[in-house]
Image (tube, rainbow, N blue to C red; front, top):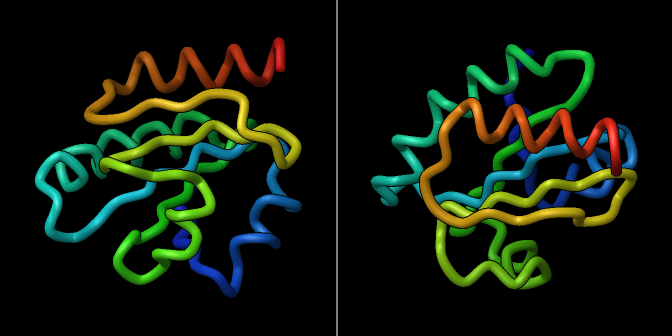
Length: 108
């Protein structure tokens, strides 16, 4: 499954249409954000049909970053049924992200 690219125009629709969503707030100039991208691609592929992975560019969507209280990037938000249920900041590994998503799917 491909990573969704969200901005102000499609963010609300993505929240409504995805039961479980991992949102990565990033910037093109951010080294750790670039290092996280291949990890997120693997997570998206492994979680296809169970959870979606999305990216929001903080430079292009500063309003969304502000609404989520993003202070440093990469910032990851785990959303279930439109509500933030967990957060993480900085580089994460594939296994931890998959484990967290499975936990959210199972337990909420």
